[in-house]
Length: 346
Image (cartoon, rainbow, N blue to C red):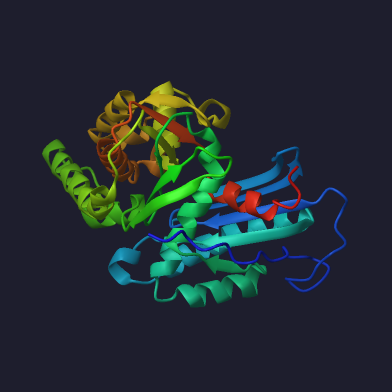
C-alpha cells in the first residue's frame, strides 16, 4: 500500500492585529501550534522549539462530541456544532494571546463523514478565524506515528502503532529501525468509541446479560473491520511491540495504576503488560453505567464510551500478540508540531 501523502502547508495562526490569516511581527522565541479536532475531542498544543524537541507553553483539551448522532443522521448536529465552536473560540483566543507564528488545525473522521462537514468548516473560519483541514485517514495515521513513535520499545521486526479515535481507529505497521519511522502498512477501521457505541453498544442501565451481549457485538464488529489488515500482516519476527495513543489507552492505563485523577507524567511512556490491560478492559466492560462513572479517571464524562474503547483495545491485542503495551499521551498534535518545526529543531 502506498505511503500516506505529505501534510498540506500550514497556515499562520489567527492574529488579532490583522485579518485571520495575517502575519504579525513575531517575538524572537517563535511559538507553533497544533489543533486536532476529532469526533469526540478538541485538543490544542502551543509549543516552542527546544533542543531536539519542543517545550509546551499552553494546551487545551475538551470533550465536544462533535460526532454525536452522526451515525444515524449523516450530519453534525446543531448542538454538537455549538459545543465545538465554543471550544474553538477558546483555542483561537489562546493562539492570539500566545502570538503563534505558525499553526495547523486538522479535523478527522466526523468531518470526513458528515454531509454538512464543509459547511461546518466554513462557519468555524467565519466565527473563529481558524482554518480546519479535513485530513485523510492516511495522513491521520502518519501524523499519529510521527508524534508518538519515540515511545516504541527497542526491538527487531515491525511494530504496531494504533490510535483509537471517536469515529475511527487507525492501525499502522511501522519499521522503527531508523531515526524516522517508515510506514509499512496502515488500515483505518470505521469504528471509534463514539461510532461503535452508537451502532453496537448500550447507553443505559441494562442488565448484565444485555451488556455482555452488546460487548460481544462490538468485539465482532471490530474484528470484521480489522480483517483486511490482519490478512496482510506479515509473520511476526522478533518480539512483537505495541504502542497505543488515544484517550482509551491513557484512561485504562490510569485505571491500571489506580490513579485518583489523571496524571500525564505517570501515564505517557508507561509500559503495561497486555494481560493487565485485558483484565482492566474486561472489568470495566462488566460494570454498569453507575459503576463505570464511579471509577476515577473515567467518571460520568467517559462512562458511556469507555466500553467501546475496551472492545477495540482487546481486539487489537488479539491480532498483535505483544506481551507489553506502550502508552502514549501524544499523537497527532505532536506529529503536526514536529512537521512544522523541522526547520527549527536542531
